Image 1 (cartoon, helix red, strand yellow):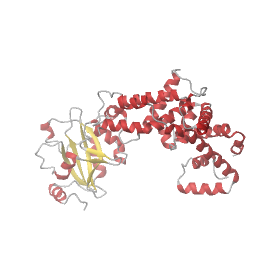
Image 2 (image 1 turned 90 degrees about the vertical axis):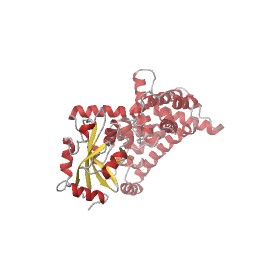
Image 3 (image 1 turned 45 degrees about the vertical axis):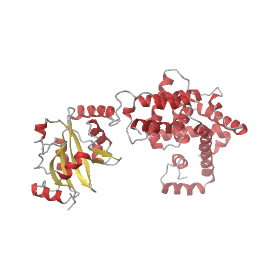
Image 4 (image 1 turned 30 degrees about the vertical axis):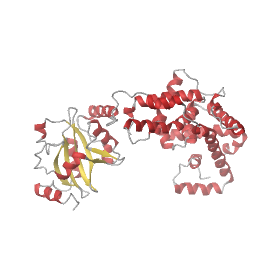
Length: 173
Length: 253
């Protein structure tokens, strides 16, 4: 396989996780896939900047995150609350399970949408994708301590939303 | 309580080293309040993950697949040295700051990325490689380092050796310079390491005309000379010692 095709194939393999990351950031599936498409195009056009043998996934996550910040600053998109059902619509499994999955995703996106952008990024990387603190710090270009403090605040806010009064225990700590 | 909230969170996220994780686990087990908190935080992570799980299983939309396979690459995309663009930037930054010589600190410390970048920027990819670890000479450079004697370099090659010496670690090392091209050349030191030539110092230098190059030999950039002075044990090898070392395959004495 040509070097070029290998890189494209590597990129294909990152797409499922990149779509999930983009959905967590944007809250809407149409915005998410627009962001993924922009990310792919940007990545391919700046392939000279990709350092071989480093993680293509981290590189693409980073491009996606930067593009998203740019889009928000430019006012082209609105971050935050999900006010349509579209995000979960394509999640068609079957009957009851589909409805449950749909509701869970929708309520989770709503909860994420209420977080400040910087916390949402960290949640998307560490809690949803399972990326290490160190790798997340590299992707976001912030010190590792910033990742952990944002994550701590996000966890507290999410626990309060998701578990309601359950989270009393945690405030007591 | 001896477990801080930060440590607790790192525990939940699997970020603690095994020893500390065991210690924290024991502490949690003996404290119902801590266990309730950890339980809740684990449930939170699990819920987030299962909420997003269906996205991972979805088929990739056709437009995204097309974007991956059909987006045209810029004409200057170079797969032989895909680092070129970044390299040139690093290179010009480093040279403007440090004059014309530079030993990448990373190359000395083992994080060889900059060394690879430097090599790549001069089209030297064929002469050096790195598998994420140290920078290793290959191709004509490795050949020259293994076989050439400083005093007998009559055939034109891409690289010439300068001084051979024994390092403080007891390994045979040799300084070298590459012919390079109009953008410059590389000079450095390679040490014999498990049958390879490991590059331990690397610096940019002016490239020479072929006739000058034939006599370049021991002439090396200041940065490489400093590195050599820091590494060398005793005196450089003389011609007889160099020949003996080569004939024995550069095995440490």
